[in-house]
Image (cartoon, rainbow, N blue to C red; front, side, top):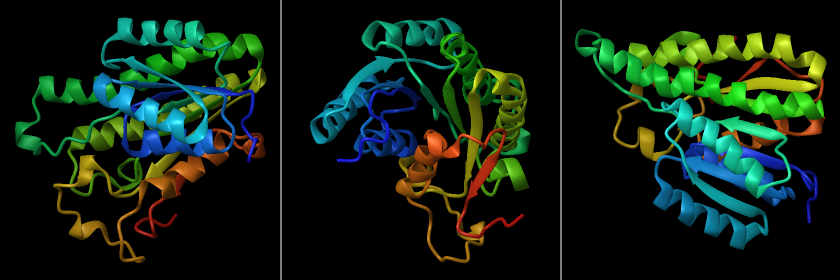
Length: 247
């Protein structure tokens, strides 16, 4: 059995499904000792936690969290420390992908997207580093998007702006936290085959590989960034896009 993450613990937001759940599974299959799956959909998070624990032996704890609510975020990290000795890894995966046209993108719709995708991720990092700084160790992986690089393909301006902001925040956090042995990186996936993208026409994505990405395409990169193999990588946005964007 792979024991790369034995003795390590993680908090994964948006962990009930999609890329976040696949990332938690990738870590668990490599020996992760415990993980909190945080999600607004507590029923799905509970089912996912049970399935993951049965399949890997990793201790899994579902937690209902609305990342647009600062009090929920504070409770999440209190919950994590109640259930686990500490946490070494944060995967910031909770997010929404609206397709609202510019003309319909009023202040409320803009704030809704920003509060989940950007402010929520910031507040999760802010809480996580309180523990990570004390132990002088941490791995933070933010799930950004190719939209942060090139603008939205079929997504709203608010989505692209929130993911661009998250990529910039990743660099800022990395600069500040390097001295505490905390690595902060982001992944920038192109269109990934999830429930979030199931009903959207992405024919203009221009992916040379001729297919949408799968969740495990992203999860394995997240696992690498959460591992000690990436100890000299920080402040980076890793593109996972099948060739739709090449820098």
